[in-house]
Length: 258
Image 1 (cartoon, rainbow, N blue to C red):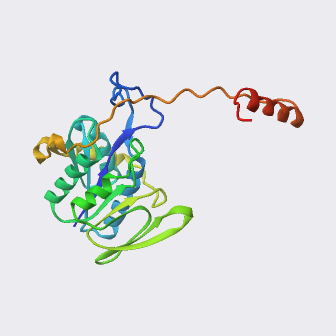
Image 2: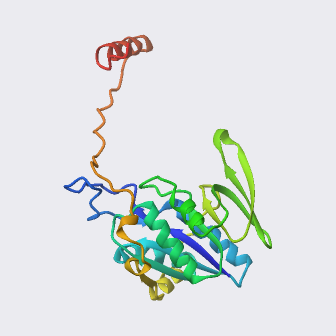
């Protein structure tokens, strides 16, 4: 029984972002890369499932430049994943080609009982790859999952919906589940786990070997720019009346909203 976890490596939220000269994306040089935070919940849930089902194996899979992406896969291995696969590709692929590549490899491995992923990646913020993977594999799926229970032939999940409400979904397995924050508390990689992960052989698959034509990529990006610098904060002093008068003056004369 194989449990797959689809991962993405993303820039750390504290890293300094630079735009490429042609404005086609971000400059990857000098960026600190980490596993997508929502994918950490997916890895943890897959490991928890294996702990209850000792015959299961957890396979972490990711796509991107192997020299970089392998680091996040080793993080998953250090957390407790059994095996890892990297699909070596160029830096900028769109959601469609990524989903096609992931689903192609998962299908070729056979025996997928469950597939976990994060609900979205914090860089592109599209929340589309997991749903596409499920469609290509013809699997039931649901996202924004904050509670997961596995039965003999099905899974029951609780997902977050608008207004703070919850929705209960039951699906037959195999199925794909996209994790939300709150599903679990991801474990820290132990020192023995880190040392063991360093020795693990990560299976490498070339994107070019999957037969996905360049014309499959439907989205290309241009015109990237950094947000404008925020104006400095003004601290109002004096008593309440003085602060209120000064605030009204600023809103009228500077912000021009009154």
